[in-house]
Amino acid sequence: MKKLHLSAALLLVAALAAGCANTVRGVGADVKGTAQAVEDVVK
Image (cartoon, rainbow, N blue to C red; front, side, top):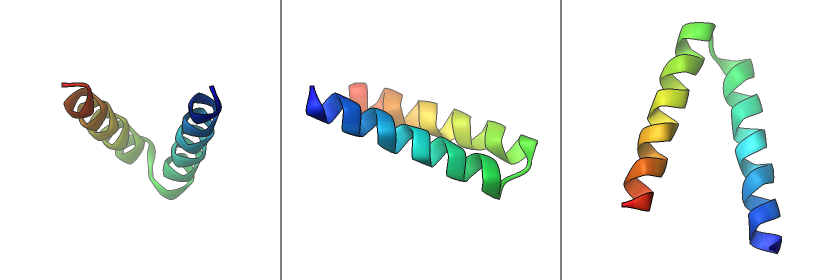
């Protein structure tokens, strides 16, 4: 359960950092890349 909370917090921080550092188009690319990375990990 503790790992789940830590993972959620890390994802939130990463999303906030990506949102601040990129344009809207860049954030879309980051989200797409993140989704692909998560999909690769799940496989």
